[in-house]
Length: 151
Image 1 (spheres, rainbow, N blue to C red):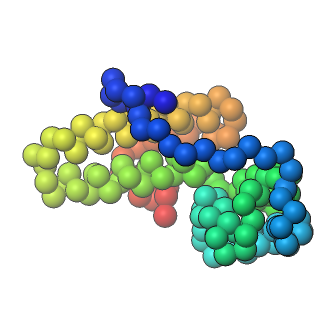
Image 2: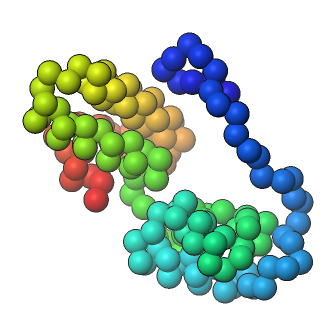
């Protein structure tokens, strides 16, 4: 896969084994997994954090194979879906921390360029989510409200 803001190729990485069914050694039932997902969300974990916790502590390698739904779909069925999608929220957090850094170090040009690249990713991703109906059509990213939108 190519890099987003560079003209070089990315590093190769490992891939998960292709599975069509839930492994037989998974001990948790579908209802138990859904309850655990809801409990971990109430503790403040993100969707990726919930998947890691279930994988490492409870031995559930793939939530979609075990329940037939992804973590986000389980949360949406319980009506606790976050206002901003997780990937967009993490980008906004990174942009907010870079803005704080640039407030203290105004001549840091490499991080100023990094902030421009992150903000362009935020704009592209928000455009996609607006087209898909995940975000409202009047939602807009602003640097001043970035910290207030994501906590």
